[in-house]
Image 1 (cartoon, rainbow, N blue to C red):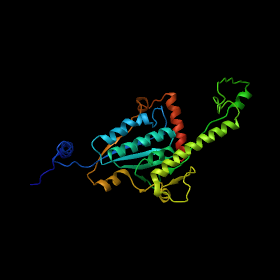
Image 2: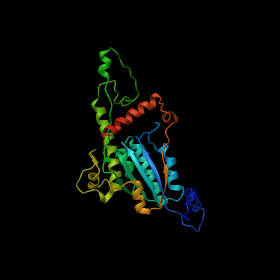
Image 3: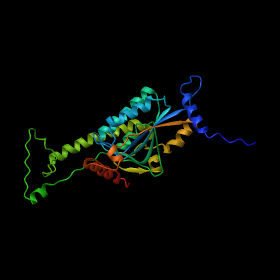
Image 4: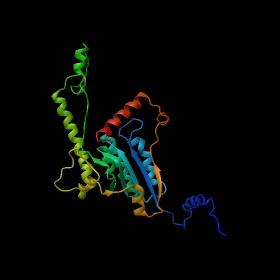
Length: 283
């Protein structure tokens, strides 16, 4: 007589996996913590990546369940260099303290600050269509002084300190302000370059300037040393840690209003800015 498989087999398997964690004489299947880093990088904006917002997830990923590795799934066009630096530094500190390797997996894009995050990993894996790079710094603004003149509007600004109103968009550009801004951007660029040179090291080709703000796609990123190969998180982690590897995913939750499809004006502006960042890379 042919026996049917019990309908509760999957439930028993799941329960057994949980029990194994608490039985000292039974070896648990390896665990990989997966941290999703998606969106623009900015401080204080809902729905974006910031050190304050993402820190609890990163801390749990390294500490909960004794993971064999932490996988960063990245889809970010960049943003704040300070927040990028803070998040990457936190990842490196925890990796070294816990002696847990970190692997980055790029989806659509890891550019500018997004690549800064990826550089915190020991290895960077990409899709054949992933966009990476843009190792540079940009500052964008607008000028409205002619608009004010046209409509007879007068802007009145009073400061203590001659540089306090630097780059005021309602005043004509001042060459001294432009020089100061360029100096600031150059300094930030040097910090960014140092991060990539330190993290990628000998993987970068000699005599090739990769810090011009240029982007690379798929195989070309591997050829210039900005990525280690083509790979996706689940198959690559199974290749490294076996078919029985378990995954624990950590990701930011969207604010309730966004999950319900409603956004206040501030959220709408943030979404527009993020859309503009992605658009730089044809996404």
